[in-house]
Amino acid sequence: MPKFESYAQGTPCYAELITSDLAAAKAFYADLLGWTYDSPPEMETVYASARVQGDRVAGLMLPPDGSAVPQAHWRVYLDVDDVDAATAKAESAGGTVTTAPFDVMTLGRAATIVDPTGAEISLWQPRDIIGTERANEPGTPCWNELLTTDLDAAAAFYTAVLGVEWEQQDMGGEPYWLLKSEGRPVAGAMVPAQQMPAQWSVYLNVDDVDATVARAEELGGKQLMPAFDVPGVGRLGILVDPQGAMFALMADTAS
Image (cartoon, rainbow, N blue to C red; front, side, top):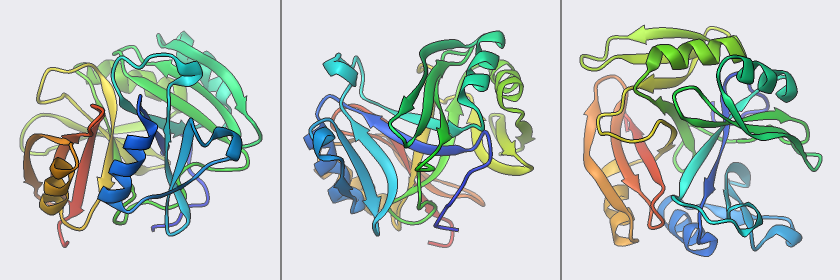
């Protein structure tokens, strides 16, 4: 289903790129994925809403208040019914609140926390907008993963805060866990293959991973590892954009 009108609690519902060079980031993803942009006139120099076929798919922004970004990165949002209640539960469950709940004009209410394993995650209580309106097709987000070395602690935290469930999968290698909301898989979690800080990652759907990787490199991005196939899932590529933000590409098996 490419179009979305709502999300269940605990489901990734939006992602924002935090970057030190908004103009360069917009040009990179526009060329790579065909994104177009809009933003309120008073915010056009600091924020851009990325769109595919006119539908919102992601956000790109400068650091708040001009503060420095030590590393460009993608920030994932999880849908919640009540941001204030979820934030309070997060603190009780061992998380750290880095941005207390606040209203984003009339669009929604948000907060940002760091889970007990060190991964940053934002919470979104929708009002005027739900977040990502189109997904799971070329040029749009299609999956999110929590990369952490402590899957047990992460699972316990998100279950306590959001009431989600977890299911362990046999992927023929390292453990892979599915996060399930209302019985449906909505995200994954795994121990990263390389040493890196705990983080949530963003997968973007494309028709051809290898061709998109090649184009990303022409545009100044870098490939972290050769593209590879995951049986029953698709072909994947892991990259960093020219400002250093990690993201992944996925082409469906049938593509």
